Length: 246
Ligand SMILES: [Fe+2]
Image 1 (cartoon, rainbow, N blue to C red):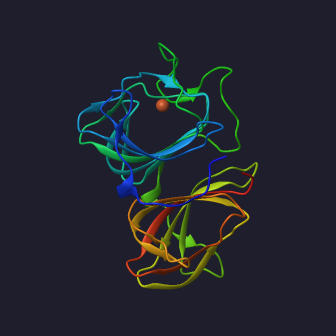
Image 2: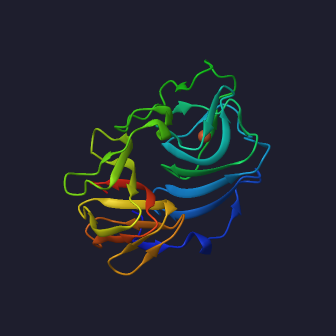
Image 3: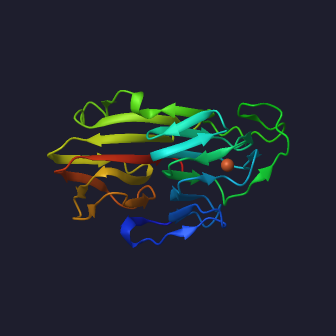
C-alpha cells in the first residue's frame, strides 16, 4: 500500500527521463507492493512513442492537461482527454505528439510492456486471454471538458464534480472537483476512503494549514488523517482518486 503523503509540492520533485524516450516525468508516489505509480509526464514536441502496439498487465489511466497526443494514429487527445485501459488492452500503434503534451498518468503496476507485433485490429482491443476485468470499463477517450459539472453532494452543493470512471465492484472512482473562486467553508473528504489528488488549477488551503498549489499532490490512506478544505481564494480544480477498499 502507498504510504501517507500529506503534501508534496510539485516544484520539489525532479524531472527524470523515461527510458531514453525523450519523455520526462515527475513521480508523485509508488506503491512498494505492486509498483503502481502516479506521475506527471511531459512529452516534448515531435515525440514519438517507441513501443508500437502493446498491452500492459495492469491498468493504465491518463488525463491530458495540455498539448496533443495522436493516439493509435487516428485519435487526437487534447486538454481534458481521459482514458482508462484495464490490463490486456492492445494500444499504441502510433503514439506521437506534434506540439508536446503534459499528462497525468497512473499505472496499475510497475510499467511492463508486452509488444504484440502485428495487431489484429486498428482499434484498441482485448488481447486474447490477457484482458483483466477489474470493475472499470475500458474508456479509450473521454472528453472531460464536454461533461457538465454536477454538485458534489447536497451538503457541498457549491463544489462541482465530474466523474471520469467508476469501479462498479468496489465503488472506487476517479473524478474532478471544482472549488469556486473565493471559497470559504469546510469541505470534508470521507475518511473511510483512501484519497489521492493533484491540484490541476488554482490553489486551496486545508484546515491543518497546508497550502496546495498548482500540481501539488497528496496520498491519504483511509482513517489516517482528516481532510478538510477550508479556503480557496483563487478557486481550484482537483483530480481525485477515491477508494473505499485500499
Ligand atoms: Fe501503453
